[in-house]
Image 1: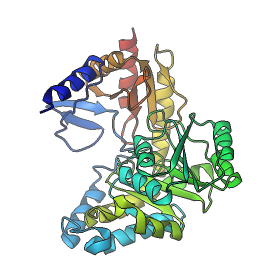
Image 2: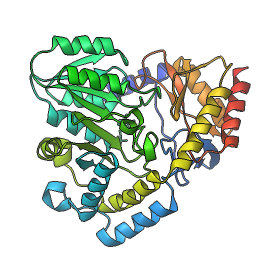
Image 3: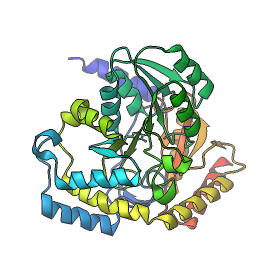
Image 4: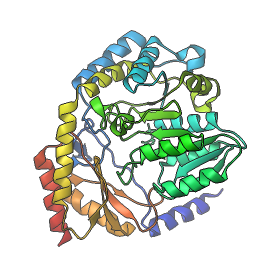
Length: 384
Ligand SMILES: *Cc1c(COP(=O)(O)O)cnc(C)c1O
């Protein structure tokens, strides 16, 4: 049995400072976490509005379970598609101003399904090099040709699109990049897609609920709209629950229902989650004060991190990476913060490029100014 091979592989990962370990959280999700008996202020989660443990959403989840039970029982195309799913899809489509929307169980599956169903042999997928792993995996699952362009390099993408004459073209990008926190250049990307008659698939995992008017996401933030935009967003981040959706023209959604394998061959998510998400959507829409508070914390943190020996990145979002470089150095810094009761994850390759290990600080509207000050002071102390 190949146990020795597996052990060698793990040993190699460990030697590079790349071994990953999970830590068990014993409290509810939130800014204040209990981990293995110790209390922490967390700067780890994507729960940008603090909704993961919101009483209104918890109550909706309970009510949803009373109405629909615990599980969906079957796939959407069998008997698992409930009124709760249907209602949420309509609300999501309206919210992001698209004709139609389709729920997926996770964002990972939504990306796999969308790219696989919309492209085939002879087509070409164009992808930003810093896209999320799920989009990269999606391209492998599709039989299309793949061209990756340098991060946000509009000129290179223009050239690549120009060289491609045959088949469908699908440009895929994170709208807010998950490990850098910067934004895709959406208006320019849309112009290119118009020019070369390409689709634009946007992954707005980190924009939905946080950016744009009433938290409607990155389309609203950048003021663009087009039938050629296929909008995907996740519901386990700012929305605080779980799942994802794709919103687009009805014909695109019909195509996904009939062809997206990660939609067809899986059990529908529990309908109670959709009941909870409907409430979450209302809270997001009314959340301007939370978003303003979060924006204030972002400004405060960026100012506070000036003068450290580690650089921040060009990010105006709640994702504020601190560039460390080496894997071990990033881990050590994360451990030193943890000893001070502050939890910030070290992000290492292959999640980010080699030699760009970093602390990925994420802020939430649930943080207080004092929480952010505490992090700033600890980092200045550790930098000395
Ligand atoms: C988190 C994330 C996903 C995956 O979403 P899940 O619902 O967690 O599977 C996809 N894309 C991006 C950019 C993400 O950050």
